[in-house]
Length: 413
Image 1: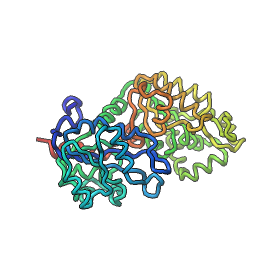
Image 2: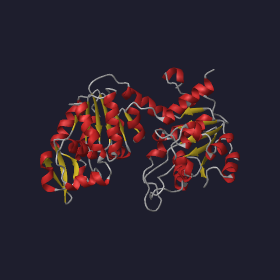
Image 3: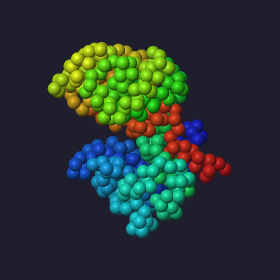
Image 4: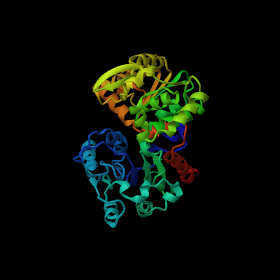
């Protein structure tokens, strides 16, 4: 699909010659891992297969990260290369460095059709600095690697909300295009972003409440939603903003997560966008592993943790979703990993599939969709958690902006 047919202002893989080219591809193989370093979920790696299969006549080098410094899943990428080999059906070799002379020699010795995965990009300190593309282009990673390549492909939509070295640095110095997954994500999310049909309903929950509340502000500012249905930690913060006593255990949870400052932001949003932000009528409390449903004004009595939305709220929210022209679902409604507290997530996901156009994003949301077998019933499923909600807020993503600027720089003639 070319730029002319998509109307996009970035180029895709079909706009350039790939055969026998030396191609550097930013992928996102970052996956859940167990304590023994085994990959627990192959979704991320699988999502890049169409791009990698299209490069069977190129010399291919892959860049990815895994985990964050200090986290248990901050590991080398050897297991990722092995799994990618199985899934792709041809060998993906692994190099335990990024731009050392050994790594560069391995890149230079690649033959057509060979694929090499370099080490975890976050093992390099410059990678985790958010800096503008022109500054990232001066990083050691970019300076050492870019002369070895003809083309850069960004296929990692899910990290393109970060202005990091491996995402934006190479676009300054190499012709750059969007990979097939990247193009699919932008196309699928654009339909939601540019949807002018009503009602447009967003369900925002999950644990990263500051990201979701920022998204609520941006979405409502651009008049992108008729209603925003809050769940999970996001709902707890909005309840607190409405002076609902959520009990000490839930207040402590919000404090420990360092979300106290979000309460005043939620309060302002409730005033500014009266009637657009919906909070639960009832919740399910975790009473020793059992589901105890109460109206929100009764939460204070038990001093028990909120673990899901209640049945009244499920019914009310489901009506909104079934009637929606656009539904965006981001983040589970509670602790869906526990059977007693997955009811809200399950029922709202089922209802969301009945909207005219339905989008789901976020790792936990995708896990729940998989478990329910609903994948084919959503119009678009995004592999990007933070990236998808940032994109749907209408904010530019540095990785995509860098591709667009590259198109102008290298292909304006």
